[in-house]
Length: 171
Picture 1 (cartoon, rainbow, N blue to C red):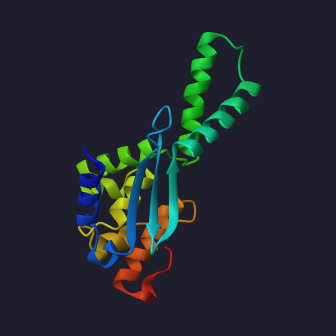
Picture 2 (cartoon, rainbow, N blue to C red):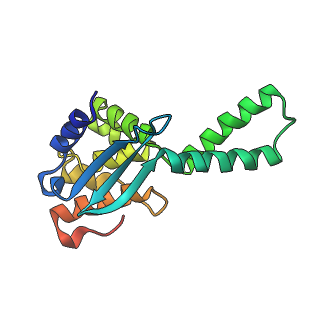
Picture 3 (cartoon, one colour):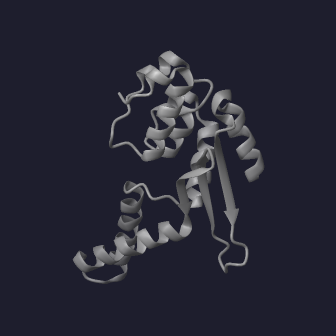
């Protein structure tokens, strides 16, 4: 699906109070040999999330190099294991590429909102927190702690503030 349609669907699902404050962006670097890109989220014009292939690849190569130093004999199977482990470790560090961003957004639009709120993917969970289908009582049941991804924490606070500025604390 085209980015403009994905973005429109996402904005339509957001609570009206936050539609003008939160914006989502995606770009492709068409002149680059592999046409990688970048996705980012802004709140009131300030960038709060950067999902770029460059950052993801840097984290991947650093993780892979560290695993190679401590890893097994460098045969073909070990290289595959190390690459797979490096990808898993980068995902655990919550470093995302623009492809991860678009994939999470697409899955979010396909999932029921209750399933999205309970998702292990922090991007899906963040999108669900600003969803207009999530009512105040459902939002109060959501437990957010300091170890959550920063975007989840920010969207949670914004959503609480949309109800009442006094309720913007963390659970």
